[in-house]
Image (cartoon, rainbow, N blue to C red):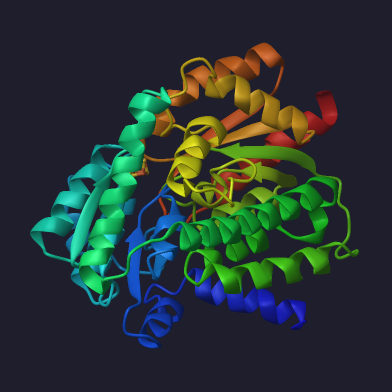
Length: 387
Ligand code: SF4
């Protein structure tokens, strides 16, 4: 096993490498390999892996790139993520990518897919839609067709046909990936001081920039390392952070919440990597159906998911209870319609369940955290003193 500090710095570097060096190097090794960039939140990465592709998560430029062209493309009253991504596309950051997937979340992402089409970035640019009808014969069939279109896009580039065997193998790898991530969250739930939220974030974000096989190796080493004592327990409250599923908060913000006396015992920062709850069937003659069934029956709660019959407010409360949380921090990107429209309903559920909460908004390139730290610190103190 590598030294744990080396693993952490490797992940930090990979997570914020806006040139995606690991992915581009992987592609150079064989001619039929393709890189498929996907935006937040979730895509079934298994279908790309099975077609000799590397799915690469594009989470925005964060606070690591000056945005000039991106601001010219967009009006001021939308979130920051699409500006950073268009800036990266117009510069050289996304060169060598073969295709891009734009999961249906909101109008910003939809319009961004159109901009990529117009600027002919990559060999395909696909708006990837999800079912809102969960009848397997209707929404399920639709979702399978959406996945087939992506496999056809890749086939046209590298001539690789996806077989059941390859798809089952990819499903197995991503099952392992999610299981290891959940194990890290389980250990942190009990011993949050062993791995900070910032370190956890780096480890997860690094995973969307490299082959899943390599990430699984890293995750196993992390699980091994934090199964033993590390760090010192502090007198912190335990919070669940929600609302940051798409545009990612700057690292300084996550650090500020922790420094203000809060252990982040669960969050939705890298939600796409944790989307499916539990394993997907990996030894079947119908692996596409297995992926479809998993989307319909095992998706986590999220603003991007149509959840009639299983409201996300109730699921948030269940999550807080299961993590033994003291409160919720609603932390959404400014102008993020999906998160901000859901927030009042979720706050109401928290109120009814007696769970304290606060909220603030951010931009991925926010640079001032003093106010946020004071707010989170006051929240922490008030819970310690009066709840
Ligand atoms: S941050 Fe919110 S509004 Fe912006 S692209 Fe993502 S989901 Fe859409």
